[in-house]
Amino acid sequence: MESSFEHAVMPLTSVTSGEGLAYRPDIYCYPIQIVNVCFIGDPSKKEEGWVLIDAGMPRSAGKIIKEAEERFGAGPKAIVLTHGHFDHVGAIVELIEHWQAPVYAHKLELPYLTGQKDYPRADPTVDGGLVSELSPFFPHDGIDLDNRVQALPEGGSIPELPGWSLIHTPGHTPGHVSLFREEDGTLIVGDAFVTVKQESLYKVMMQEQEISGPPKYFTTDWNLAEQSVRKLASLESYMAITGHGTPMFGEPLKAGLQLLTEKFREIAVPEHGRYVH
Image 1 (cartoon, rainbow, N blue to C red):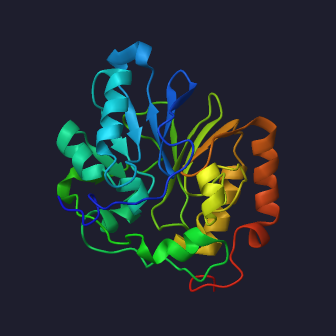
Image 2: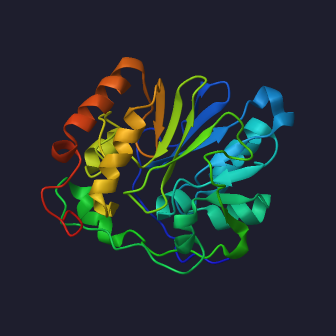
């Protein structure tokens, strides 16, 4: 296994970093600097195990391990990746080595997770703020997990997550996925949409809640991104945990998604940029 950025230092952070919260008995959101990871599993039912969604920022493995093992007393039965950008797989190599857990991702994301492809470079010309301007310094390399990562099964089910559906939500990356539990309307969306203006350094630091499309500087297919948001907005969701920003609930979530779908080109798509057309 190999990652060129697992030990990189990324100084960006937010006021919520390190303050994990349980939003349901089995849904725990743990912010790490500017990104969220999720623990799915009820700590009162440790025998059922738990699943980690995404793998955080570079150099965050120790924090994830400490938080998870204090909560569950053991490692996850699986790790599911929404996609392979550096802030969602930053600690994956160290987590695999520590926990020896199987890793799943969409088949279209595997080339970026097995050393075959690098992601396109971030686009600093998109409008939005200082994070966009800093984005050329963000790693865009793929990583090589070799045979430690496998494709999520076709059909929308997830072996270690009964009751959850897998939704292919491309646009931000080709194999981006989101997860939905119909029973209670819980949605985990990765970066298909976010609840903070991710391009603005001030808003990222302060975590001002604002529903937005996927991070502009890394999104390469805006037509697919719009289709993915429409797909997610059509679900009867009550709670959405996004890769960036604080969770959103109830009527504000419903109204925000309706606005985002109606004005996607105005809210989400940059006025100019290398991937806009």
